[in-house]
Length: 98
Image 1 (cartoon, rainbow, N blue to C red):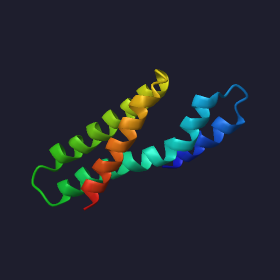
Image 2: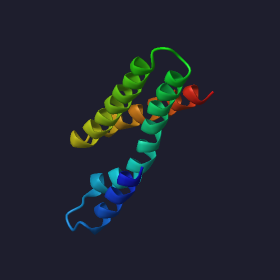
Image 3: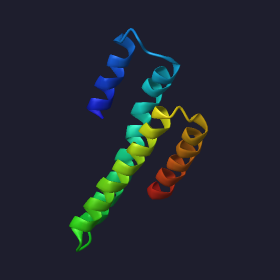
Image 4: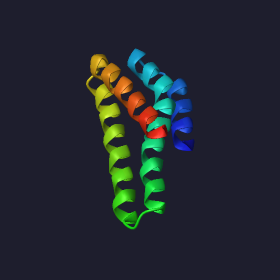
């Protein structure tokens, strides 16, 4: 979360930012919070189960996949995919929380 915060500050000081970069800067901290919840859920599950390595790797790869998909939305400027991704991530985080 600290890196996301520091990276977000840099976006505002770069002179060549665009609207997409500004939207990325506003959403990246919240997105990283969602990715941390996904990873933390599986790592936490691994603490109480026998296969800690599998659960930890599931959390790592799950968070990495969602982060890569999030970045892909901005690289391709596909805001419709970003909307579906955001709603889907929010639903997954809520389901993991309860």
